[in-house]
Image 1 (cartoon, one colour):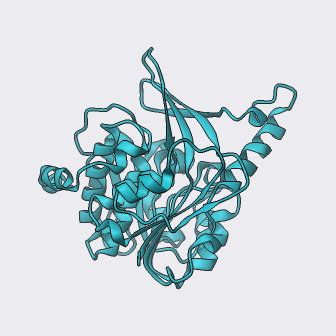
Image 2 (tube, helix red, strand yellow; image 1 turned 90 degrees about the vertical axis):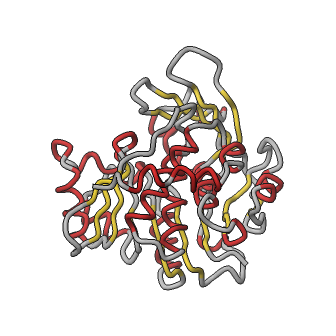
Image 3 (cartoon, one colour; image 1 turned 30 degrees about the vertical axis):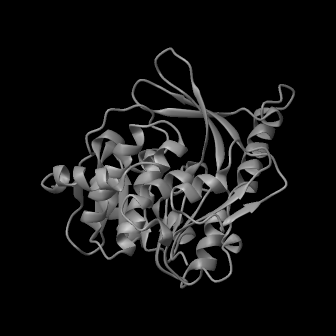
Length: 320
C-alpha cells in the first residue's frame, strides 16, 4: 500500500527548445515528474500517484507507472480532454506555456475568456483530495504539485492531519497575486512550502531571497525551500538560524521540463524517509539534474536510482 502520495496532473507536453530544431511531444505533467524524482530515493511501491486521465492521452499511462514500479490504482478517468500545451523555452531557461487545445485558442474569444477556459480545463484535470483511493490515507507524506484556483486550499484543508508530512509546490496562477501572509493563510498547516522563483519573485525585493525566506517563516511557513534553477535552492527552517544555500547538481541539459516537480517529489520522499531538510535538498537537486538530462516523463520515470546515489557525494560538501 503506498504511503507517500503525489497529487497532480497528467498532460500532453510539446517542449519547444530555445535553439531552432524540432520539438518533442510526450505525455507529461507534474504528477509524473514528481513521481520520477521520488522513485530515485524511495521504494517505488511506497509511491502513490493520484491523477486524472483525460480521454485521448497518448500511450498507456497505467503501464508507464507499472513499468516504473508504481501502482496505477490512483489514476481516475474523467470525461474531458487532456490539457495539451506548448512549453516554449528561452535561452536563459525561462519558459512560457501556451495551450494547444482548440477551445483554448479560439480567435474569437477575448483574453479574459480564454484565461478562464484555460484555468477551468487545468482544474478539471487536476487531482483533488477526494480522488485519493480508499485506504491510502492517512499517509506518511503527501505532496501537492502545482494546481490552480482553490484546489490547493481545499486539498490542504482535507489532508491536514492525514499526512505526517504535507508539502505544497504552489501554482503561479494564484501565488503571483498574493503576499507571504496571504499565502500562509491559504496553505496554513502544511509541513513544507516549495515555491520556484517564478511564484515568489514578486516578493523578493531586489532579488533578496534570504530576506524573503525570513518573511515567509514569520508569516507561518515552518519549512521553506525556494527553488532557484541553476542557482540551486535556498532552504530555511523557521527558528533554526539563517537560510542555507544548496547548489544545483551538475547537468548536461537536454530538456528543462519537470525539473522543479522532480525536485519536489524527491524532497518530499526523502523527508518522509526521515532525512534532514539539507540532505533531502541535496538529493532533490540530484533528481532535478537527472531529469533535465532526458526528455519526457517516460524517460524520467526510467532513470536509475543507482546513478542518483552515485552522483550524490558530489554535492555532499557543496551545501553552504
